[in-house]
Image (cartoon, rainbow, N blue to C red; front, side, top):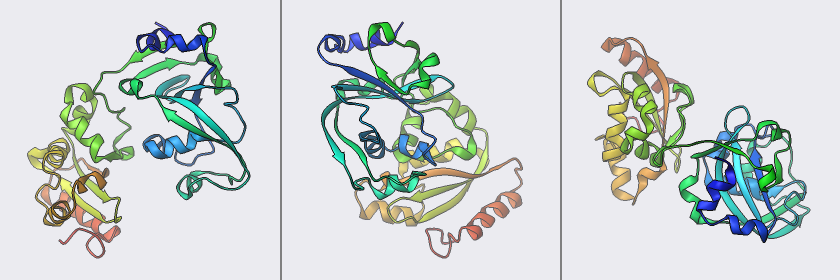
Length: 287
């Protein structure tokens, strides 16, 4: 199967004869932590809307992918180009600038609108750009089409990155837990380890450090967070009680994977990280 056959299903093919369409595969070595952009919808939209060259001139639609593996690309979204502004001063957010290696002063700012009828393909459709990765943007037509490698399960969230590269929002964590069969690698990797983990409150930057051990394993512990939002921690309970949907501010990461199962070793590493990060002094840990 090839790319345009997938979009035919969504009635996008008729537009091929009406408007010029570009396909773009984002892989940017100018960005220090590109995953932060890929995992933040608003930041990704801003990143794509700004271009140093007028690469979307005469373009009506953009089919957007991001770098996945070797020459593969993962579908992000389809955008309609509404207008273009030639900017001569910095109009990019401080958050995006902080991730960029180079200063941003001039370029083109596009007003883009997402076509929502493609939402169920986001992060699921994988294509092969083959040698065309040399050119990260190109015109879309049937002669210059891409081979479809895979369409991931509908409830798939994202690839398992390795224990120390895990960064999960609450929404991602809950979707992985609630759809275990579609994210089995996460279940397999997290259901047999003890770990010291960190919950970051992105609203206040407060930190909460705890350990997962005994029959819980890490999967069992995070499953409780997805269900209760707080795992009976009184500081988290207070936050959630006083603010509607406050759990959406929480981010989950792993600090240390424990090979030893002795209680004294678990407590040692838990206390070590609390001391390193001062979580008792300034943040949410009270013990």
